[in-house]
Image 1 (cartoon, rainbow, N blue to C red):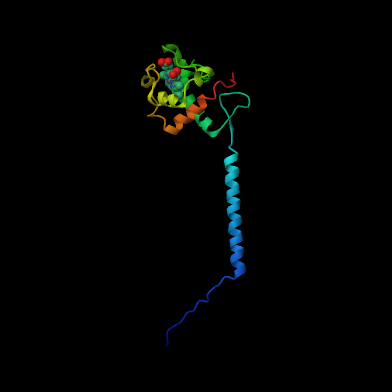
Image 2: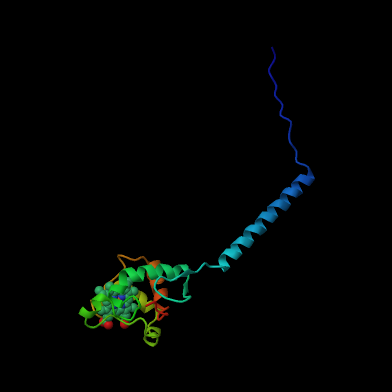
Length: 156
Ligand code: HEC
C-alpha cells in the first residue's frame, strides 16, 4: 500500500473574474459612501412634547428637552420663563431662559460652567444646584442647545 496522495486542483481565477470582482468592490464602496452622505444630510427631526405648532427638534435638542423638563423645569418652568413650582420660594428667582436678549449675553462657556458647577461657582445664588454629578458633558451641552431654543411657541 503506497501513500495516499490527494491533490486539490488549484482554482485560478481568470482575468475576467478578477476584474468583475474589482468592479463589484468599487460599486459597494460607492454605495456605502452615498448612504453615509445621505445619512449625514438628513437628520431626523421630531416633534417637541412641550412646544406647539411645527417646532421640530433635532436629536440633541430632544435629549436636551427631556433633561431640561426633568431636572430644570421645577424651578425654571416648562417654558423656561422662570416660573416653575419651586420658583416662588426662591430669592433671587430662577433665571428666565425665554428672555432672549439676556440669554444671548451669556456665552455657551458660561452656561456650561454654571450648569456644571452651580450658581456658587460664578458668584450667583447657591439655590442654583450643580449638575455635573447628574449630567455628563454631552448632556449639559444638549441642555444648552435646548435653552437656546427658548422662547418657542407654547402649547397651552
Ligand atoms: C432648585 C431650583 C433650580 C433648579 C432645579 C435649576 N436651577 Fe438654574 N437657577 C436657579 C436659580 C435660583 C437661579 C438664579 C441664580 C441667581 O440669579 O443668582 C438659576 C440660574 C440659572 C441660570 C442663569 C445664570 C445667570 O447668570 O443668570 C442658568 C443658565 C440655569 N439656572 C440653568 C439651569 C439648568 C440648565 C438647570 C437644569 C439642569 C437648572 N438651572 C436647574 C435655580 C434652579
